Amino acid sequence: MSLRSCILLVILLFQSGCSQYSDGLVGDFLESSKCPANGCANQAASENYISLTTSTNSVNTSGSNPVTFGGDCQASTYPSNVINTTVVYQSSGAPVTAAVSSNTGNSVTPACRKGRFDVTIDTSAMPAGNVYTVKFELVAYDANNVAHRNAASGFKTVTIRK
Image (tube, rainbow, N blue to C red):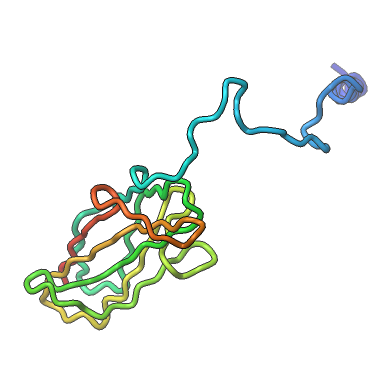
């Protein structure tokens, strides 16, 4: 096939994809409803759908700092949420001061975003030779800023050995 024939074929294919009868991908189309013809599933917020899972149950820091945990989460359809994180000594349950942050999103406050979360804990002030329990709790807030929790699936603990 000659170069001229190839160019003609490309032009012909391009024009056939842009005929006046085709629906382009770009334009002023506005979808009137995201629901299928037979209706939408119930989108009401429910505490039953608040959940949190981590990718690990135990970490040995071996001197590494900071430590980042991540996993899957679901905040139902509540408009906002946070992941409360506390660190305690495993032996006594006494609280430990440790800075907690997130690396994703516009805020450094840990939260469930698009079904995922990350929590970074600064372990530099935590004394070595101890075992710690990190408690994560996903708390969702409704439009009136009322907190909603699921004690069964919205709560997770992880062990840190330092």
